[in-house]
Length: 375
Length: 265
View 1 (cartoon, chains in turn blue, yellow):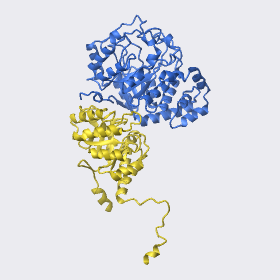
View 2: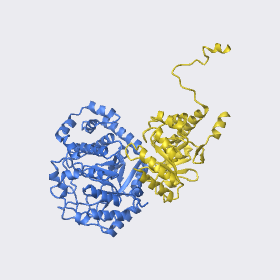
View 3: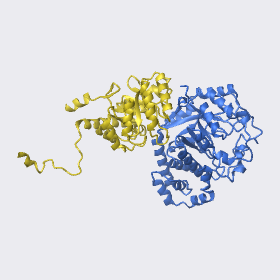
View 4: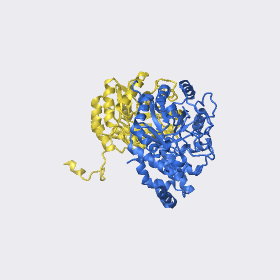
C-alpha cells in the first residue's frame, strides 16, 4: 500500500474528533503500556493531557532515549549550496515570489570554502541543501558536489527536492547516505494554498519521495512537517504514521523525524496555528514512545534555552552554528537566507553546554568507508 | 587458599593471548569520554571495543581514542553499522590498514532498530576475514547451529546475544546459550542485553567464558561504580562455576537422608 492510501484511512476530521474526545483514562492507559499502538499515540497527543501526565510522559521518553541512544547528541551542520527555486511556498524565504532575495548557487571553490569552514569546526555530518531549480542545482550538480565533499566528511545527507528512485541511487553511489524530505503539511486540501505553483504543488509526488529513497537503499531517511502550516496535531500524527510506515517497509533504513515550527511573522507569513513550547514538548515525547528507536532532530530554528531543556526528552541530533544562506559561513553577507536561526551559539559553545548537562557531543557516527568500495 | 588457587590459574585465552579479566566493555553511549574511561578502569577489563564509525581510526588524537591506553587494553575495533558482509569486511580492512592489531569484533546488523545480528552475512564476513588473517570475534544470534558454522569458519570466539542490544533484559536466550557453551571449542562471550551484574554472574555461572557490557555501564549516573559492580559480578559467577554449583531440584532434599541407615548394610 502506498502511504497516500494509508493516509486516506485516517481522515483529518475523524482524527480531530478522536483527539478532542480522548479521556484522561485513555491517556493513563497509553502511558502505562510498554509499547504503544497508533491509537495510544493519538491519546498521547491529546490536548487534554494534564501536567502530571505530561511529566510521566516526559520521564518515560527520557528513559527510553537514554537507554537506546545513551547520553550522547550527534551534531551536524547544514551546508546550503543554492537558494534558487521555482516553487512558490508561501512560508519560505527561497520562494520564487521573493524577488528581493539575492540568488546564488555555489561553485566548486565556494563549496570547498564552506566545507573547510565546517570541517575546521569539527563537523563530520553534513546536510546539503538547495531549493528546487534543476537547471541551477539539479541531480548532476549535487552528484558533483558530493564527490567534492565526500573525502572531507564522514556522512553526507541531502535536503533538496523529491527525486526518482534511480536518482537517489545515483547520489548514494556518489556518497550520500541520508535523505531529509519534509512534507511541510500532510493536509492535501491546504497544500494548493501553501504551494500555489512550482513542482512542489504535486503533493503526492513529494509524499512518496521518502519511499523512493528507501527503495534506493538510503541508510537514513528524515521526515517531518512544518508545524503551524496546518493543524499541528493532525500533522504530528501523520508524521508518526509516516515514520512507522517507512520503518516497516524499509527494515535496513533508519528513520528520523524533525519538528520545525513556524514562528510568528516569519517571512511575513502568518501561521495557521501557533505551537507552544508545551505542545511541542508533548508531541516530541509522544513520538519517542511511538518510535523508541527513531532519530529525533532539532535545528537551530529553536531558541537556545528551549533546545537545552529538550535535551533529555528524546532529542538525538542537533545542528549547531548554522547559517541558512549559500556561502554564508565564509564571507558572504547573510542576505540570501532561507529562515533566520534562533540559537546563535557556536558549535564549541554547544559542545560545552552539552557537556555541562551530562551529554557527549558526537561529531562522527558514520564512516564513508561503509559505502565506498575503493577502501 | 583453595579459592586463590582456582582464580590465580584461571585466565581467559583468546587466539593465543591471555587475559586476566573476563569482562569486556563497549565504549558507546557514555555521557563523556572521562566517564567512559572511569568505567573501563573500574571494570578491570582488558578488552575494550570501539565502533569504527565513531572514531577516526587513522588519527591517534581522535577525541575518543586518546582516552584508551592501548598498552593497557586490547583495542577491539567493531564493525557496528555494517549492513552486510561486504561493508563489514571493508571496515575491518580499514582498521588494519590504520595499524590496529588484526582483531575484529564482527557486527553485521542490517536492522537499525533491534540491531540484531544477521546470521547469513555474519558467517559470510567471518569466512572472508579469517582467511585474511583476522582474529574474528563475531556478535551472533544465540543459535547453536550458527555457532558450529562460525567455529568451523575459524572464529576465535562466539558472542551470542543474551537479549537485544541495549535492552538490559538479561539472559533471555539462556537455554540456547547453554547449548552453545556445551558444544563450543572456543571461548563463548555473552554479548548484549546484560543489564545488571546479576545477569553477568548468571552467564558466568552457566559456564560462559566472558561477557561484554556497554549500555549498563553508560546509562547510569555512576559508570565507574557500575563498572566495578560488573567486575565483581563476573568474578562471583566465574568462581561459582569453577567451584561447581549444586544441582537445582524441584523438591526439598534433607541433608540427613531418610534412608541413610541402609548404608550400613
